[in-house]
Image (cartoon, rainbow, N blue to C red):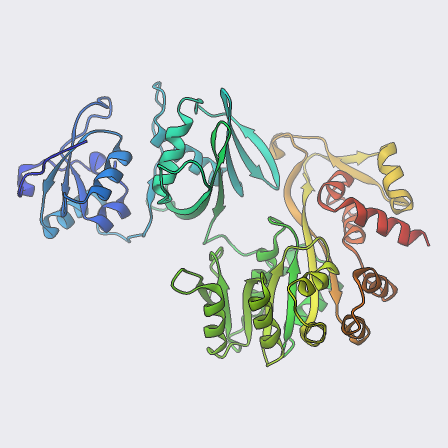
Length: 510
């Protein structure tokens, strides 16, 4: 709670202590012109903190300062020059990063961590363990913290008690600029944080936050996005040589639509960005429309969807920027689908994503958006469907015999294959797996398939035609990787739908 501010104060009247000033994130201080004054004893949580402000009458900023400091505050009014001078003392004149939070290592402590400390620890832990998502789940009398690593959820130890979880979620809401008084409807927001491990170890991380009500309170899922993550070269995605060659040839077409399909977390964006990075030779203009921008690709014109520039408006504007290649993210409705098809027929290579179970299913999905069959057949070049399977740990890989269940499921597909699996070691945290490999199927739309699409042929007919023309399914690709000792039958069953496994098995028996 804040006391009434003094009219004005002189900076010289206050002690400037770097550790105390850094109790508030540097980007927050610079954005709102606030600074912690005096020396704050971290062992005295009930002590009042003096905060210098340009506008001490702003209730929203006062509330956020109180929540960030978790202490009562006393405000004094300073002019802009004095605040900037104080911030230079506290944070230096180095590069300024626009962020909501700065996370620094904390010394070991015996006291129960505060909500602020817990949030910092959880966000940093997700990055350190290379997780894609953080899950905070509330149950009656219990709370779970889980990280999704290589596609699998892992339970993590946490000091977060059921009594403290609401404070932790409120802290996350404040950072994500969500309404902390709203507990009955879902909310989505974003946090940008700087993980600061020292002068040469500063990493900017974006977090996408989803808060959903639950019977025991609220559940939070946080997607971790590293904008500076290194791109995976196309040769390391896991495509076979022939598929990789055809895929890159498709992208070198003068026009047409190439779709990458799969569920959330199957690596669609990674595949597209890897291809763009390889194609970006300086002779073609590449533009993307993204929500959000997940990776930074050098010399690619990446545009962020925003409330001021919604997806459909941005796409129309980008087509006037004379692109050779346009990455438009998800084809999600009739408007974006029509834009994609029209652009693909007027001299552009258009890349997009769809959420479908397999490559052939993309055609039915486009029809479901009420797009015309003839337009689909004219514009669609190919569909790449993919999954991510965990790689066998190379340090503890050993031969395995198939189980009776695996023999019954895969039948003759196992013939001539020596299965392998990871025994589990420290290198793979005793999971038997380390990192992931892509499993793919590439459906190329040739003239025969164009005729089928125009005639309204259903998915089963299109799939039959594709198989008669040497189409390799994801199951085929997975079995090749199993034979090469890269992954396991368990991973095949985990990531590929059962009906697709059965269909490929039965087809290969004929």
